[in-house]
Image (cartoon, rainbow, N blue to C red; front, side, top):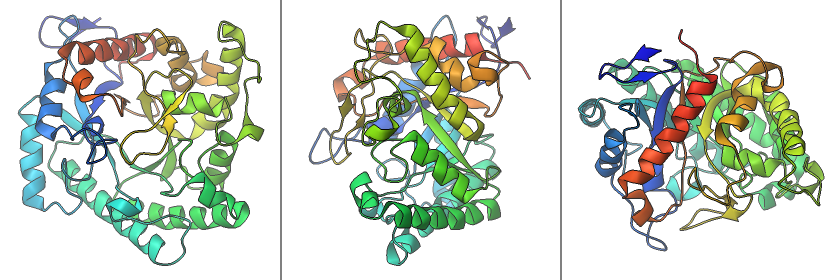
Length: 358
């Protein structure tokens, strides 16, 4: 057992435990609830405690009102001070590659691709600066295709090739900045909306040292159900959720295909339904870890992502931190300290079961 400096003990030192700040922004706005500002999200994260153990850091969305994609070095120094003052660090950051945030669809060979790559370039610059400021010891830059499955389906092969080319160019930008990109597996992104299509895209890019996969337990569960890609469903149509062995085997199939590419990981809960709020398309519903409708046994099912040999082997150690993602919760839920304590408890259960010390 390891001491954490305040008398508490934890089973392992790694992976470090992060909270995502972007649930304060994603799914919020004029057509939903107002955003929760970054300082409040940082305070909620820093205050969480379970048996004396707290979060180690935060992952950030590089978009107003949290962190401007056009932040200056002075802005980033101030950000680093705000995070450091709460005894936290920064890990992965999300590039705002979507058209409403200044980006463009990755399947557009013209202006859309140019805007997409511009946002990746800015995000990688911010990530590099935060690393140089000593506040970001690890993490990746997260991207997706910034287009819908319906757009992609207009020309599956042609659009898949276009997205792959955009991602190759984005990977070159990341490499020039000493960064890595993680493509988010989520059913609402065209070319990434099914596990087979996601593997195909990663293989087309073919640069695992620079562009890998970002797995979120809530989103990837929907891969097994074939949402937006019924032909790639793994679980049977009449699946009974009390049949745990069948779910385990489905997750073995899924994670054996995507684990070798996984370089960023979100702990999450899902009730096997989709949900969207604000301007966010419907995707895997994030539930609180103890939601009675949740279909995941979080520490048990995390093992399929975090351990090799079908989830039965040694920790892969493919990333130094894991993050909780809980987008589109009501503000009233997010403002409760007990929400973050329950989340932190789930994160600790994952690290205690699948962590390592060096």
